[in-house]
Structure formats: structure tokens, C-alpha cells
Image 1 (tube, rainbow, N blue to C red):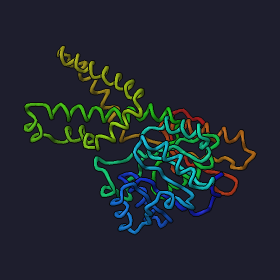
Image 2: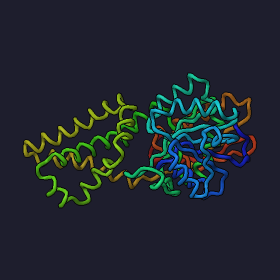
Image 3: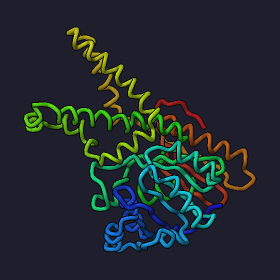
Image 4: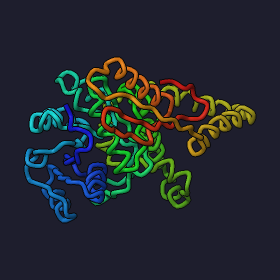
Length: 346
């Protein structure tokens, strides 16, 4: 059971580093009743100095909240979820921001929390860390993955509505394992590549000369190597199987380019980079088509709930997102944005 539509949310953010702090500041800027908590006393004081309530005890921060964001380190999320779930009411929507979703989703299901826990992952960030790097507009236009389940659709709707309204985020509904497979190439392998390039440069006898000449290509290619090492390691280990599989595909493509270079095969080298350039260009030039969809929210709409869930998961799998979500009375209305030319499903 989750809070009814139209109820003004009372929110808590547990863990106020870069992502959690940016969520906290965005909610505060929107005028919502929000409290924060962090295990670090100095960070709690920074939150208070920003004018946001931040008790010393976790249970006090989440007391009487209707939505809680869990934003601590990835390995701590399952236990934090269990602790917070026991401290809040059954109508409180819980979500996280971890970079992998499979493990925490399985934990939630095993502990009977799938009806009110919605795994989440905002695809935003910087190479900086901590509350000092937090900004309230970090998520403007960013993809924010949410993983809906049949039992958790009411919680998903409430959370999706908040993310679109407060943060101007693009909500991408996905199954947890699908998210982890996609995030391996979209985020996790790039961290390995950035680390490899920066690390190899650091070991080179030409290090200082390279850094003196480093321009956009080197800086862009190594940007995420500036991420705190512990956070990167947790992310990679949390999605190890998917990352290793996709890294194999990257190696294979790199081997093709290296072989073409070794053979002085200009045609093959050009073709490989032309293929890569097409994907890079598509990142910034993807036309979308918009459509509206409505589903009942009544308790007797079991079959229609399956239709709604199928629509949501198909949208995310097709590279689409939700630009709007409104729960009104006995219906939920979505505005879906799907890449032009993708198969219309749902």
C-alpha cells in the first residue's frame, strides 16, 4: 500500500554524497518537506547549513516519511533497505540510486518488499564526490531508470510522477537484469577504459609530456577515471558478469581496429571508425515520437496491470522513456517517448 494520489510527499534522503545530496537539494528547492541523513557528522552539518533537517539518528530522519531515497555505497544498500523498511510505515515508497539493480531487487523480493521498493538508478554524475559537489539541477534531462514490478506498480507511479515533476528527469522503466546488461556498456565498461588509458599514461616515461599535450580527446576519454576508486570498484564488482561479457565485445572490436592498423588496411580502419562514428552521432541526434497511454489503477484491474507493466518494460527495452506520469483518480496517464522507427509495442 502506498500513499494515495494527491498526497504531498514527505521525503527522506539517506546518504547525502553527490547523488543523494543533489536529490536532497532538488527536493528542497521544490519546496517539499525533506530530511536528510548521512553517517558522517560533518556531512550532516553541511546539510543543516543548507537549511535542511538532518537528524543525528537514521530512524529520526525517516520517521513519518512517505518516500525514502537510499543513496549510500552500493554494498550497503541491502542492509540499509532492511533497516529503513522496518522503521517506516507500510505506505512509504522506497527507492535507491545504486548503479546495479539485480542484487538489490532480488533482496527486496526475498524480504517481501517488492510492493513498495522500486529499484532506481539516475544516469547522472560528475567525477567529483561528496555533498560539496551536489547541485539541485544535476538530473535535468537525465535518464533515471526505475524497475517496476506487477505488485509495485502503485509505488512506481508515485515515484515516476515525482521524478518527472521535481527533477525534469526522463524516467526509463526497465527490468533489473536488463538494466545491468545495458549499464555495463553505457557506464561500467567506460570506467574500465578510462582507468586503463589514464593508468597506462601514468606508468609511461612520457607521462608529463602527454599531460602537457592532453586536449579534449584525452580529457573526455579519462574523465570518469577521476571518480573515487572505491566507488568505481564497487560498481564494477556489483555487475561483474555483465561487465566482463561486454568488455569481451569491446576487446573484439578493438582487436579489429588494431589488426587493420597493423596491416596498414586503410579501408578496414576507416570502416571501423565510420561504424563507431554513427553510434556516437546517434547519441545526440535521436528523433523520438510521443504517444499517450492510460491504464486503470483500481484494485480489480489485474489484467490491465499486466498490460501496464508490459508497456513500461517494452518502452525501456526499445530505448524510450516517460516524459510524464499523472495519477488522477482511477487512472494513470503516461506520455511515452520512443525512438522513431522502433517497433510500437504496449
